Image (cartoon, rainbow over all chains, first blue to last red):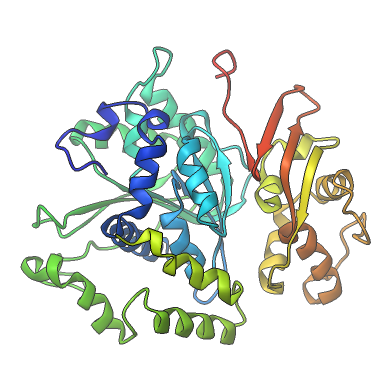
Length: 284
Length: 116
């Protein structure tokens, strides 16, 4: 996301904002990679997928594939949809494992009914709330998106959207269109008391009703961590709580691959997997 | 990238895709995953697509019963699903005549102004 105080979706339509320069910036920023990876991890957690099973997932607004990389690490197969050719080209150059489709969320998801076991979307949904063309009607585009998404999901599947809502009217518009399209669910807010750490996840259920997961950093959460120490301690929190090697290190990658092989899951060849994380040009 | 093409809803109505560049790569076989993907496909569309790409080989034209335990069969499906990729080409919907170009393996599903 842009570091200026202006919201990106107010500056230009997404296919123009995410041009080659922005796309390159996005994928070379190690902080950006870290944030996207953490949000993807949380989104997948909220998907509540069956354990130890490779699923077929949809990544809406996949961009340069930062979130998709996390899905591949977890052994899932995925299809990413994005409107920016520049971002998708970066994804192709980074040799992501998922399949990519150039498309506009607001025109609908062009997939067969019941295809996906789940859907995630990181920082993309807010782009649907602005009319970038005279012909655009945000409520209509939101509805088209949600209704086609609903049909493309398997029964009982979930769709989790990480977003930065501009205001409550926007949230209201989004949730009402999602409900109209047949979804149930609601907002999960992590660390509601911390301005820096606060994250919004719209959690939608297709075909079944379920209890909404609890947000992190709230008193009743199992993994509750005091909001004051959350942000700086975030890396070590992930390491300590799971007792595994530091994320992204070579040991971590090799352990993960070994674990997946033991589970009989899909593991990509050694060279390409290590290559993604250790090409020098992606570290500043 | 073949797998997503098979799940695009236009494919269910395609009578023959015109591919100009196809690549076959080696992908690790996950029988459990392939088995779960089969019910989501329209079998005749899969056969048509494979044939159109010149990669039908020994894929059965009818879906066999008890495929979950049939490793031989699952490997044939795995090949078409995950190993055959359309890098450059065009998907065409026979109903509308609409064409969706594929570049570097990425299908372009963007509608024009008039179609939106």
